[in-house]
Image (cartoon, rainbow over all chains, first blue to last red; front, side, top):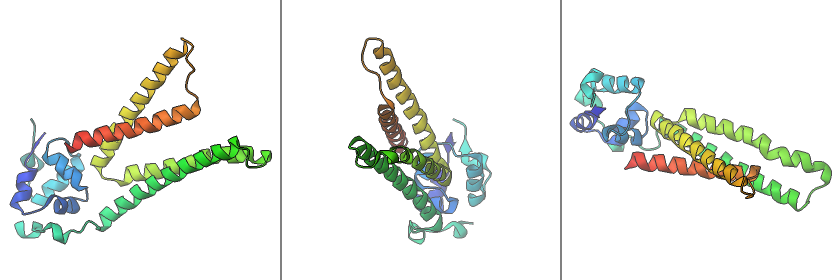
Length: 63
Length: 145
């Protein structure tokens, strides 16, 4: 699954560690999502959406 | 919205409550694995060298088995306590480790028909422990690339 997480994180001037802390996940999780090696669970995807104030389909897209 | 999200890494030290809870369950689980491995080794040394009275053989021999229940419980707490990505690495690694362990045991089993001695329970323990490590390492490396 493609993701705009890296772009959004950069736009909000957040480090991977800071974003991970806000989402209560490990930095490796953020890294893996950004590298498109891991698809987040629905609860985590919704949490990311809420954090950036966007619907999840604007953050995550099918390949 | 940007202001509410604007935080730098400095404002989020690694020792946050969430991270410290994860670290705690991870260290505790690893520590109990180590304690269990030491108890198993000591038990084997004590019994094989007959360092205790014969009446204590059974309770001492079974002590690592009792301890293993607590060790697996600590591993379970670690598994449910870490975040979803670490959990996925664990699950993937366990599947690979189990498959690899079974494969090695099947090879031993097939070779036993040729007269080669098969593995005993201690060998199987070592095989599965090593396969677990291989599984975890392979998945960790694959996701971190």
